[in-house]
Amino acid sequence: MSKPHISWLSKYIQFDTTAGAGNEEKALLFMKSLAERHHLYTLYLRTAENKGNLVIALREKDLFPLLKDHPVSSETWSKPPIVLLSHVDVVGANPTDWEQPPFSGAVVDDEIWGRGAIDAKQIGMTHLMTMIELQTQQINCPILQLITCEEETGSEFGLKAFLKQYPTLWKDALILNEGGGFPIEVEGRSFYLMETGQKGNTSFTVTTSAVVSPNPYMPTNDAALKAFRISKAITDFGLENEQLSPSVHDMFSQIAKSLNDQSLNKDWQQLIARFPKKYQRFFSALTKSTMTVTSIQGGKARKDMNGQFRLTVDSRHLPNTDATVIKKAVEDTIKQIDSAAEIEWHSPFFGYDQTIDPTLHLIIEDRLKESFPEAKTVPFMTIGSNDGRYFQQAGAKIVGYCTMLPHMTFDKVLPLVHGVNERISIKDYEFGITQLTAILKRLNETSNLGGNV
Image (cartoon, rainbow, N blue to C red; front, side):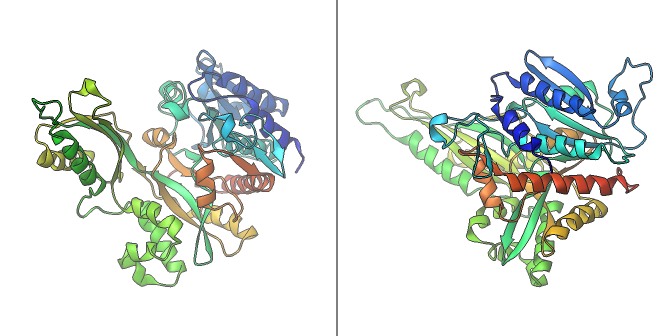
């Protein structure tokens, strides 16, 4: 592989596209120029000042469904497209916390440093390098690269705007997104995660009632006691008889089978107990709806609250659990402690869960096994969220997968995403490019690109 991919990713990282700053356009136009220089076809859709979405295609005709005024535009593609999805914006970074400046794109000890080196500029550049590699191949299916803005802040001018402009084109499309491609290690086996679902999430605030003491020197502490009792009840919250989401069920079943212990299919907590301790809490959270108190305000420092306390709660629910059931159960629990408490729910994010097509799963795993014969790929549901959920609403099939080498395990990747000293090794980056190129070549040979894939 030639070396421009290193300097290109370094340069891409050097654009400060911190979420909320509105500087995404220069980076998107940089990617546009690289694509055009290598004879790819592009469409830049400006959605606001310094914001937009970039589409890159292997073939000019694959842009036609997006060009409504084009003289030879078509309603849709001959078969559902494959879309390589990434985002240009990144979360903020404090330079004083980093060993290398976060927007330097520094290459140190065969690693590329900077905000976005994993989330998600590396993915965008991996996609572009793959498109360039595929250009010399006989590709018959429509393949698009889509780089959006504002993923980190709600996607209003990013994917939401894109899907509002093109709402009906994505039924049965295959979206290859962020969210997977790194392994967990269980008893010496590498299980590579493929994101096929996301937990739903919302937040709410609870404001306790307060009995104001007539003597300011002898406060009742009534509201504080209620706040801490509510906090414990929320932390311990659980719904009875919640069912595992299909992707989580499949993940656990496949891991249990690989460990040659089918009895584990009857007790998921017993299976999780065989995971390294560093994984257990996270994967246990995939089996149930969970809640976390993220802040408590009140007391003498908040005289404006008149003795009340306010709790802010983050709620992550299984996608197959009815949100109204959770809401009622939470409110009943809180009202048992403080019947006069005020509860305010904020706009929820929906979750989703999909079953990966066996053919696609086999293609991904076969490519991985060519390099690492003992590795296995398994479906996975994340507790976080990304733009995949919006494509799912449009009828698409989403798989989060961008392959890394086995050393880059889940527990090593997670702290770098939105953390300090974000970086990726050149070998991991190059492995992702070669894997994705091979996967897309094989998909091109497969007639069943849409449907259940």
